[in-house]
Image 1: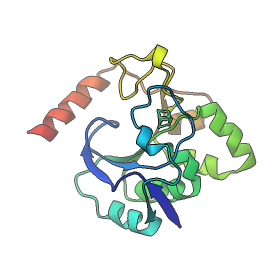
Image 2: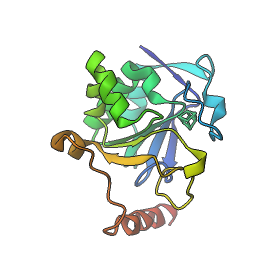
Image 3: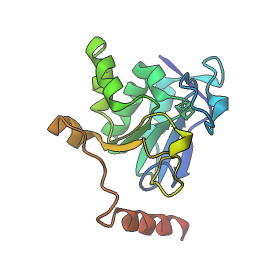
Length: 185
Ligand code: SF4
């Protein structure tokens, strides 16, 4: 199986979720959010094809990373490949974040027709959902661009059958800043 990526894996990101993360920039997106920061990732024929087994091998050999982040582009346009990658990362003890222009509710609807979408959600720790909306842009938000986007705690959401968000109080940011300081030392 192949996956189309906009770039090789990017290690040591501290801005794409909690901790130190490896980002997988998928290629292809048709959401067309005005003022998207990554328009070069929209073309479904752009970027380059990578073998999913090679990506999984890279993930298995990652060192000093807290997790992986699927971003893009929109990873959900390559659902089979990103599900394989997410499952591999979970088996390696890494946590998995995913950015998508689809809402959680839309993904659940897609899962009614194709259960792989549910399998994908079952292997995600945090889903950052929804399009970027320029009129809701807020630079103070944690790990997202506009206030309609949510940091969804996927394990708790699936367990409780209702959306549970990652708390942005309770010292979460402080913990993140400490971790970030550690990275820079
Ligand atoms: S979903 Fe993301 S990559 Fe796609 S247009 Fe919107 S902001 Fe850009």
